[in-house]
Amino acid sequence: MKNSGINKKILSFFIIFAIYVLAFLAGFLIYTVSKYKINILLITFAADVTATLTVWGTGLIFKNSSVYDPYWSVAPAVIAPFWIILKKTELSTAIILMLTVLIVWAARLTLNWALRWNGLKHEDWRYLMLKEKSPRTWFLTNLVGINLLPTAIVFLVLIPVYYSIGFTGRINYLIIIGFIICTAAVIIQTISDAQMDIFRKRGSGNIDIGLWRHSRHPNYFGEVMFWWGLWIMQMGINAQKWITMAGPVVMTLLFVFISIPMMEKHVIESKPDYLMYKKQVSMLMPWFRIKTGTSGTQTKQ
Image (tube, rainbow, N blue to C red):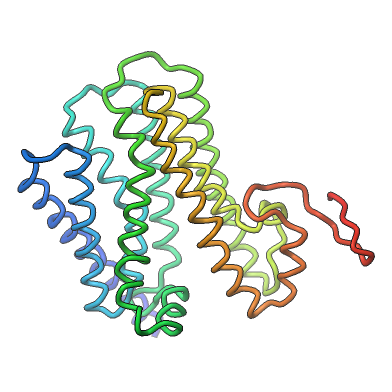
């Protein structure tokens, strides 16, 4: 039975790999058809959307929207090097640093997905919930909310990399600060995921160890922090394109107003004592824990 389960998971990985190869080829086809008509940003976005639609379509075939889940981390690792190739510029130290943290981030997040994924039989509980609550609008929710919107947001936060390519100047303090923030963000995500695994092996209840003692979502904090760090690196390279700040702003809003509330609403339904945990622990940024007394007074821990 155990070997049968392993074989099914290996087969599922092979199918996902084939799907993403197909998605890449579909996106590349769009690029080859339109490369002489529009600029590089629009070309790659059109290719990105085409690849997303390919993944979405296969998700319909397999009746599993989680086919899209690794796209979040895989797409940037393909798009950024593709931009460098298209621009035909030499790699400066700054760009190497930026590309390095991006690839490390992508590899870690993709590996994290792979370790926790249970094969094509598994579908994210959030998708199942949305499908059950609103079956009539599920087709649109799946296409736009689960597939196209995340693709657009990830592309938006990736634009600072595009405007950094071609830089040949010296390393400055903003590039260093941004690199440090990105590196710290990946470390925070790695530690928080490891602590979550340790906690799950111990039992149930509200996670109350390590980073999770001071942030309800340190893994999300690391994700948001990473994209702000990437933008700061770009500001050290090309400060004139400060408008690219829209990317990390939108990413922050996504987690604060959509991802976290949805997650916490789900948790509260099964763990009513999570309400007290919410009052004591910072939502995103790790901070002092608030101890709530019986009289209603609050003190920092």
